[in-house]
Length: 233
Image (cartoon, rainbow, N blue to C red):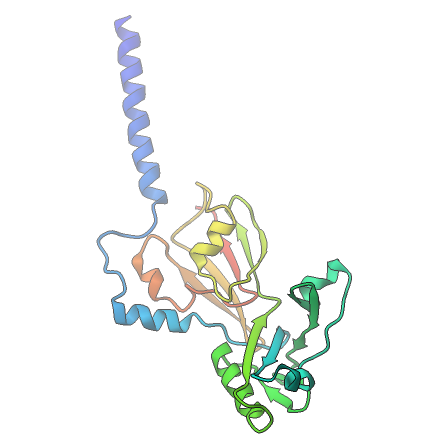
């Protein structure tokens, strides 16, 4: 009886030690490192805005004080089978509006105002540029742009790997991992790989989620079509 009690106590102590060790190994960030200051955090928020690239599908809606005056500047509304709606259209109530595809030259062809180069520009820069093109025709034009085919992919040691559509215009690597069900106990949190296509070339970034330095990385906020890969430990 005494031997059994000792064995149970030893097992319990071993369990506690192993639990503490596992918890330490899979914890995120470091409490001993500094977090971004307020000014730096504002810069990080500004840097999260995506840039448009060739192949992006955009919904561009033009409006103004006189709604009828904007009709020539918008693509026509129409309907498509549901399986194509996400890729080619943008919902506006019960209507569907055609989208623009940025070509290899980084341009889109808009009604009336013609070709506009949006490739390489941020959304705010694109809106400003289109507004300037519209000013000779419309009074106080308003431009709304939405990236339709904004998707990211999470692979490797996560609970639910796959591709995910992003609707709010930005996503961080932590949010992406959350969408994939978080990293599994076998995943390496110190060596997250980000695969990104930039101007037709692949680039690779590494993130260490055990360090607060992850918040300073240009790969913390994901771009469209980024792939997040979590390797095994």
